[in-house]
Amino acid sequence: RHRTGTISALFRLEYDRWPVERVLAEMYSFKFGEGTPMQEYNLRTYLPRPHPDPGQWQALQRALAPLAGGNAPANYEALLRGLRATADQDAMQQALLAYITAQRPFALPLAARWIETVDDPLAEPATHLAAACLEQTDAKIADWQMAAALIADFGTPEQQARLLKRIEQGVHEPTVSPRYAALVAGVSNRYTRNRLPYLQPVLEDERLHIEPGAEHCRYCYVALVRLAAITDQRWLIGFPERPRWDHARNKARAWLAAHPDQLRLVRLQPPTGNNTLVASEDCDEEGLSRIPRG
Image 1 (cartoon, rainbow, N blue to C red):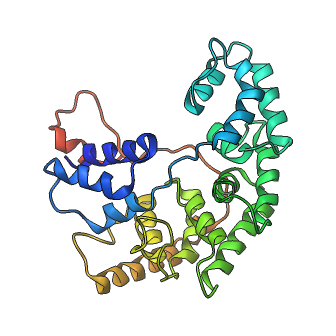
Image 2 (image 1 turned 180 degrees about the vertical axis):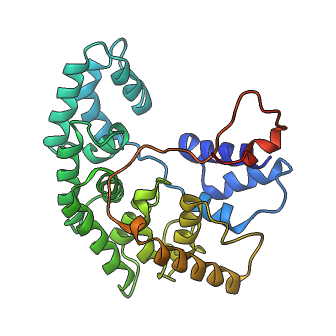
């Protein structure tokens, strides 16, 4: 019910693009039980990977579809699968590089979807484009979001410091700007330790989200639930009222103060995992999450 229901809800958000109210209604309909604030905060502020609009899709098709092999891809997901499966990887990489460096339509979301490691040859031109996007006052929301995600994972120290400063400035703005909202969404879309420095200032932002479906979510509590998941800390349990949320925030502040090394700006590192499961261990289904950590 719970982990399965959550994954099903994420599938609805990511692939079916359902509104979050419909997603939650379906999840709770399968004997999920009472909802938890932490769960709802994570689902309501989930950022689906951007899809191109019709004009952007035409540009992607013209530039990249010939390299995807077989029939013309029916949609963006099919194009990505075709590119990853193409036999001529060198030509495909060159085409992607040309598309990104030329700042073609949807270049930043494409780069964020494609690049997985810091040594990808596309990372440097993509983060260069992302850094320029952060300085624009009229960029597309998806470009701001993916620019933040790219720099948080693959940017240079200077680019990452600039991104962090942008977020810190946004916390103190009188109202939530679209760019600030997009940057916070971008740095919140991955649960890895390199995202901790960007979540720390958001922990002090008590304003409400402006995105549809998340209007009752405070930025500080979104940062709290992301921090709790990344650091594996049980700061917030059950169905707390606001004083307990703020008590949990104090615990998060104390943890961050006690772990300054975790707030250094670094690039994405491969996950190491917390749990070790040995094939011979006899565990019931619900016990799989309680295997002693190795």
